[in-house]
Length: 84
Image (cartoon, rainbow, N blue to C red; front, side, top):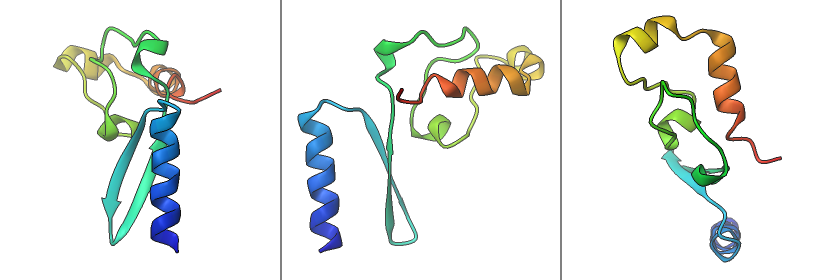
């Protein structure tokens, strides 16, 4: 039953053209629904977001961007992924 519920949920995301990430971990599937990348403008220090970044990983364009990145900037950027 849980498997069919999961597929039904994923199919609904496709019908709604809703972006998401699926992460397979410890025999579980995590589904992270997210904003479309064309719905916001990301900061210059990043190339955008995929599943890694949506889970809290940080990729920057260069070491200077990484060294200068602070908690406030990171929170502001990750908040852009939240569906409001």
